[in-house]
Structure formats: C-alpha cells, structure tokens
Length: 201
Picture (cartoon, rainbow, N blue to C red):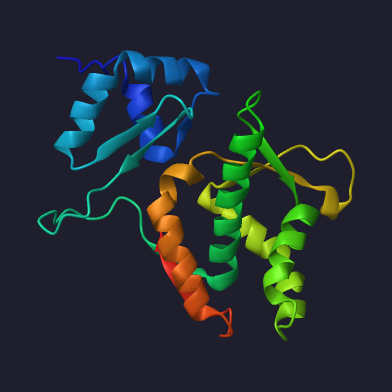
C-alpha cells in the first residue's frame, strides 16, 4: 500500500530546515491552515512550534526541561564577544525602529551604521583595530545565525552594504534575555573579546 504524504508535509520539512517567514506566502498560508496538526506532529517528537502571526515568522523550539532526554535538534554554539554585542545592538535597533516606524515592518541597516554603533564600545580599547579588521566576519556570523539578511548591493562599496534586521531576533532575544546578556557583556568588558559569550541556538 502506497504511503501518501500529508497535505502539510512541505510545511513540516521547511520548519525542520529553517525559520519560516510570511514572505513565503504559500507555505505560510498552509501553516496557518494546518497549524493544529503541525503542532501535534512536532509535539510527538518533543518540539514546540513558535508561531508569531503579527511579526510574520515561525520556528521550532526544544524544551529545556530536565526530563527531556531527546537529542538536541540544533547544536548550541558559543558566540564571541563581538557577535554577542552585535546581536544586542540589532535587537535594540529593531526596537527603536518599531517605535518610530509604523508604516513598515522591515528594518534595514548598513555596514557603516553597524560599525559606528559597535565602535562606541571600543573607543579606548587596544582591541579596536582588530575588531574593525574582522568586522565583516562578525557580520557574516550574525547572518548565519539568521538575524541579518543581506540585500542586493547597488554598488561595490562594502560600507554601503545593507542588511535587513530579521524580526526573529525579537523571539530569540526577549526583553528578559536582553537584560541578562547586557549584564554578561558588562562583566566581560575589558576582557579579551575572543572570550566566549552566551550560547545561541
């Protein structure tokens, strides 16, 4: 007897692969339609569906409960001081944007703007030159985390390269988590930024 895939199989596969945004209109619409069976499916394998219709994204979470002995779906990765700091700045940039702009949901920022913001924290630091030398690498690390999305570049000037701040950062770094990270960053201040900061999934 032939096994037929359920109507929402493509939604399941997409969520197992990555974050689903409402930009993917067909898959997003199907997620909303089949939300209950999708949640039930993931619950059976120890995963939770985090769906934010207002912000327009959905992703999978794995409970932290001690009794949950299942292997982790996503390996935790320790972040460098610079990457952690940039994530905090992006979270704050998005929050400021949401207060000021009620017309659009997309927040964009340039490499130069990010560099100016992060430089403030290294004005008197001997590590400033090293930080700027590897700033592009820091940005790419945040892109891989899914918090930034590079947009098409109009010219070859790397300083003018623009990125969209992805709204999932609001779910990954809540207000409580943001304050916790700020305190940890303060504790790391003055130390070698190669030191590792909080883990990220």
